Length: 105
Image (cartoon, rainbow, N blue to C red; front, side, top):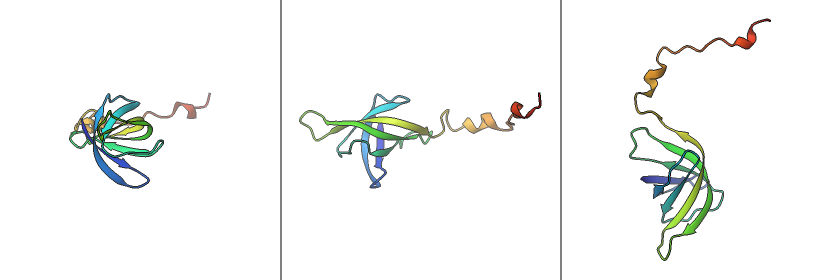
């Protein structure tokens, strides 16, 4: 899946391809190098859910004799509409329950 990677400390953005995407991590292939422990934002520009995640570089290595670099990303948090564009409708008219801890015993 095509992604855009942004290094937070430099605000530099470049394209990449995400592989093995999971809830807590992913592998990204790109042409730019990133430093170990860099905080990055990975955006999925073609997703209807506006999905992106914040993470940290866990490892990186060159891919064979190519110019490409593989980067392991430890994901800290995901953002976006998780169940699609209509997710907000699930919460329409939703009211929080009262806090039961406030009742005297």
